[in-house]
Image (cartoon, rainbow, N blue to C red):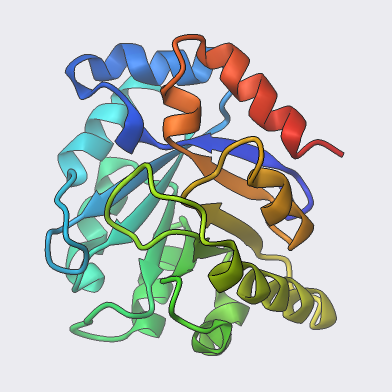
Length: 225
């Protein structure tokens, strides 16, 4: 899939974990091709979600592409566990603490045959990603402060950065996806698209409504074309 293809990625953070198999199937039946999994450690962000075992469980439930976002310190220490669990893309934060380095972690992910990505906190400038843009498949611009779902979309703080990433990518002939995560609904997704996004992580707006097929259709329509 190239960086001009628009995709809606349901975020497992908003699913009902008491019936995870059914929720993953609900996303697949609603047309999702990628599923987004937010891993939080309670240190890098002020919340704890799940770890490799949840990724492994989801992997057993589906053949959807698993987009794993590590909102954790020392992601290099844990990378191998998520690789073994069945992740297909692993995105790491430039702001996290590392035993080695961001570059070495990206190399390890790539060497395992996975795609890799860099994520930026809303307050982190695009320039922080520049040392790594030649080595990534995906740049994730967080459009809320990471840690909790249901937050409002931070347009003023994040859209100029997203546009700068798009302009740099295109000017230098790069091909990485631009992903947004946080406050993505039918009225905010088009704003992100206008500024370069092609991957739209949707939690509350996808899993929240009782008719997920309808919600996914509406979200996809909002970024069509």
